[in-house]
Length: 285
Image 1 (cartoon, rainbow, N blue to C red):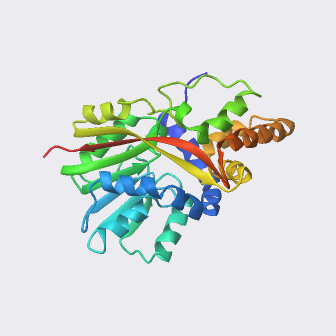
Image 2 (image 1 turned 60 degrees about the vertical axis):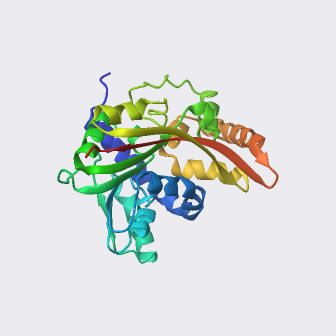
């Protein structure tokens, strides 16, 4: 069976993320609060300040693009790009609610950016690059459109074993159905988890002053039922695996996921660890 083309992968992902757009909006406030520390770290690593023109890749329902717009102020502007138009519709509603007039969201493919060379003062991207079928091409585009002496800041998931938040449901699903070993070169949640992997791609694209740090945190829920429900609502890759189970298997798998998550209870909350690889790089002057 032939491997899907990059175009086919992109179209499948567009459908996947549009499918979960409603779930993202349902859990919007919760995850905006839970992931605020990552958004602020990206804004800091990209060296954002008043008046900048910023591009955010894979904006989804708006973060960190909305924080970037607040940071650069009315004299700056932010453009957010994402495959899924329904996700961006939620982002636009949030921008309106925040009274932000300096941000625009556009549907597009990160590997073919419709912008002139050296046209942005900074680029941010959160949990996007590892899903791309042609990451080196996307990184080359990032290097092309950055102005000299400016920064890109990226967040991707680190190793599975350090991410129980994501690994628990995958491990449980594997107890019911045989899943093929992930192709290390194929798009996926942990595609850029290895230290130095994304940093090396930035270096190959001609960027320098590269930092690569594993950033630890957790996602906190009041109840393990909320953890399970949120995963099923927003995590398109996990939804796709979940679809391989029968109704009876789903019922048992849900109980196993909830039971495992309870091991991370801290008093009145369940704190599920996450590990994020934060990679930043500068375009030479």
